[in-house]
Length: 392
Image (cartoon, rainbow, N blue to C red; front, side):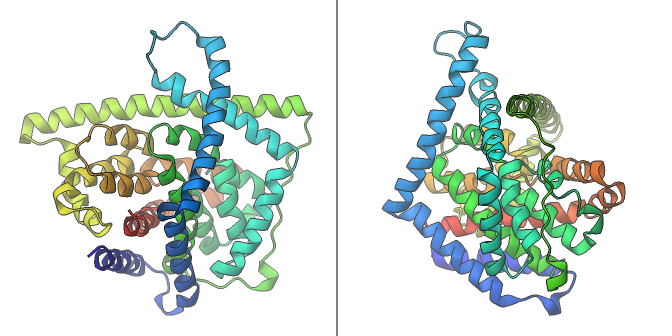
């Protein structure tokens, strides 16, 4: 039964992508088949084998250690603010982003990350049938973040045609920044976070190649990455620490605003029609939850959490997931994989704003296909969750 529902889910996702395709006749199905196969193999390894469990434990252990080190700094600055045994969300989940951002800066400075990103991107370009620029951008987005990644290719922004720009932005919205992966792992199981990151990477290429098929000519396939302005080690470190703090503050502000707004809207809907806004959205998203492999009895609750992520962000939805303790472990796993991406309405503004800061004309182009961008990135999340559902 799981296999039948997974096939149905895959067909639904591919069908919904084809509906908005710019050029259905030129969709290349061979790379799609290869990437589906890779998703199945990687999903099986990460979620259903001893090696995958060992790998995830290793990754989780690294982030646990990093969060522990971050805790030393947090305790020094904020020690005594929390009650004994209490765990304020801002201190325990968001502030460690500052330390992880600093670590990413160091790895960038000593050229470890640029080399990894470059060569992983080259390998991916052989698999996905796309250009080196698209492959680089997908990997770099997961390291640098959905807005910062465009700075690394700012010399090329003006020259990138609209169809390639869509793919670059879609991959940025479908991934998550490495600086906040540790925060996710404190809210949902690490194995779901790791699986989602890997599956989304290939899913992003799949959906983009259906929605926006094109062929990159060899003379167009030039990857020129912007070198960061030369800074001293401590200048760089200070910059990355402040960037991490800005991310933590931004996420905290977004959570404060969105959680309060959702509570208010739920109250209004409960008063007027006797059902909360999130419950209403749950009914709309329930069919998608079902084709992802979630039992129909739990589909409305799961759909509510999925909708919360899209209209607000993944942090709000992860907090909401904790309010449904009756959900089965399988459903929690599938929903968790769905939540690990930047596919939400606010990301449209973030990405368009980042590009506009580098080139106003391109920024306006991105803003115009913003809803199509969110549509495609949401399909990537549904696809990844469907694949994961096979092995949970």
